[in-house]
Structure formats: structure tokens, C-alpha cells
Amino acid sequence: MKRSSGVRLCAAAVLGALSFALVTGCSGGGSGGDAKDPGTAAKALSAAELKKLIIAQGEVPGFKVGAVPATRSRAITTDSASCRPLARVMSGLPPVDAAARTDRMAMENQKKSPTAKPTSLDDLDEGKFEEAMHKSLDRDVTTVTLASYDGDGAEKALASVATAVKGCANGFSGKQAGTTARFTKVAEEKATGAGDGSVAFTATMDSDDGDAAPVHAEVVRLGNTLSVYFTSNLGAMMAKKTYTVSPEVVRAQQAKLK
Image 1 (cartoon, helix red, strand yellow):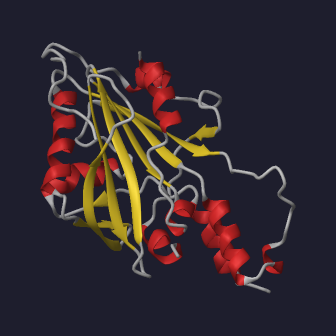
Image 2 (spheres, rainbow, N blue to C red; image 1 turned 180 degrees about the vertical axis):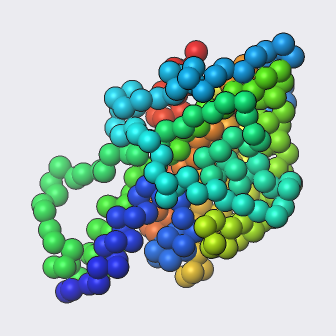
């Protein structure tokens, strides 16, 4: 059974991207208030210092770590000022502007069955083809951003996320590279990282076929530095399979900051 090259191109493109057009067109909690006082005299780290602290290739077992591609770094914008911190986090940006920042992308290695045999997608029937597509795309892609602030800026930035998660529970509209999408709901999740405070949330997006398309994010504060994590997994979305912010990535990054 022959299929158009568009399907293959879609599958290849989405792995390194968060694109509203790709997600909608291809798809079939924490604590931030009781943290330690960071101190108003704290001085932000420089971008050069942050680059030494962010995860690198070989430091997260089961993941390939590298630069964030342009397709994933396109900013999500929204007219809702109260929800803007969430849109920024899902763009791989700190919730509010920081004195310095740096980022990386961690892509989970493709899951392989020990008994799997190489098979051409063109030879599969529709059911098997869809299953193969889901499996090939079922891997976490996480953007990691480190952002440093002067004074109590990091604490205030984290608080803005906590406030936005509650205030934007009923969703909000966003735009990315000219494509508009509606996040139908936002909900707080249990955070993976500890640090001096953390907030995690899931945002559910509409897709063309009416299926929910959830994405996940977490922000962790350690002193005057924020670690921002944003994870998408298109295969899991297509298969309606639960996933979260990649805990392996969070643990590796937080350990490097201590």
C-alpha cells in the first residue's frame, strides 16, 4: 500500500518541533510559595556560566542532547497577559525575561522492540501502519532552559507561573508562526524537581480531529536560577497515551545545578 510522501515528511518534522500546524494536522503540581528567601542581593549568573551548567550530550541516559532547532524555538504568543508566562514556558523561554539564559533539547532515543523486524511502511495495512507511526513518534522531546535573575526575580518569575496556571484553567488562545490554536484547559501537575520551589502543569490543545493534544511543562527554582522544562510527545498524543515531563531530564539537570 503506497502512501504520500506528506505522511512521511510529517512524521519526520514533528520530532524536533512544537508546531501548532503539525500537532493539529498530524495528530490522529508543585510548590512556589513556601520556598526559601533567595535574598535581594543575589546576582544573576552570566550566559557563559549557564552554558557550563546546562545538560550536555552523554549526561542523560536514553536521550540525545543538542541545540534547540529553529522549528521548536518559534515563540507562542497570546493576547492574554495573565496567561503569557505559560505561553513563554511552552516556547522554551523563561516565564518572564531574565538577565541571562541558555537552552538545549533532549530527545528520547527511539524505543525498539527486541523482536522487531525491519518492515517497509508501504507494506503495512492501515491498522498496522497507524500503530507503526505511533511507535515511531512515541518519544519525549524536552526543551530545557536555564534562566538567571538578579535579586528576587527568579522567585517572582516562578510565582507568575503558579498564578497563571490557576488563572488560565479554562484555557486561552495562542499563535505560533501564524497558526492559531486554542488551549482548552490548563491544570497543575505534580512537579518532578524539588529545588527551592517548583510548578508543573499540563496544557491541552485542540486538534483538527477533535482529539485532545496535551503538552507538559515544569519550572523549578534553585536560588536565583530557574530551570524550565517543556515536553511534547506526538506519538503518545496520537495513541492517547499518558506521558509527563521527562523525569530523567529533570533529574539530570537538577543534579548538575547542585
